[in-house]
Length: 178
Ligand code: AMP
Image 1 (cartoon, helix red, strand yellow):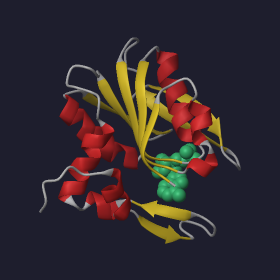
Image 2 (cartoon, rainbow, N blue to C red):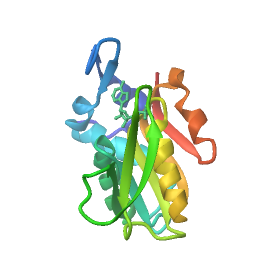
Image 3 (cartoon, rainbow, N blue to C red):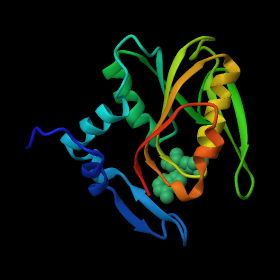
Image 4 (cartoon, protein in one colour):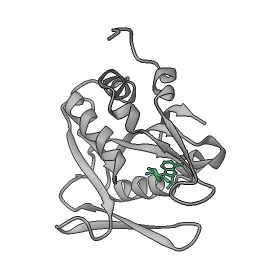
């Protein structure tokens, strides 16, 4: 096992493209080969937390479901709390909710009312930025509570979908772009 720092190119080599999943026309970016590789997993967390030190962030918020993987690991590294943003109906306690429109229909995400305080410094993470609908809704939800979003980070960005345009009021970082 090499000790050279992990680069975004190393990470990209471990992303598996699965055509027509979960429906025809979608090329699914499967991150499980990256997650299964100890060096790449820890390198991905290092890259996604770059620029932050313990004490800089109060909570790392992860978006249901693959965002949890990166957010929980980043929270441990930054000695911050971890907060899940989930699809409506999954969290057991009182929640703040935010709805957003999809190509067909709409979706609602939720966060526990006691999970994030006004003024909390937040790093928001997910695995992939596509149209940006999910991340924009999570950003609005956290900003409505009065949290301060320091950065929104993704492992992968599908740039041709222009999701970044929906996140214009927060700093956005992604490691791998297609
Ligand atoms: P969006 O709201 O369109 O930015 O979609 C982002 C969410 O959908 C992320 O949480 C991703 O996990 C998932 N997602 C969207 N497109 C893909 C894709 N091509 N491959 C893997 N996951 C995807």
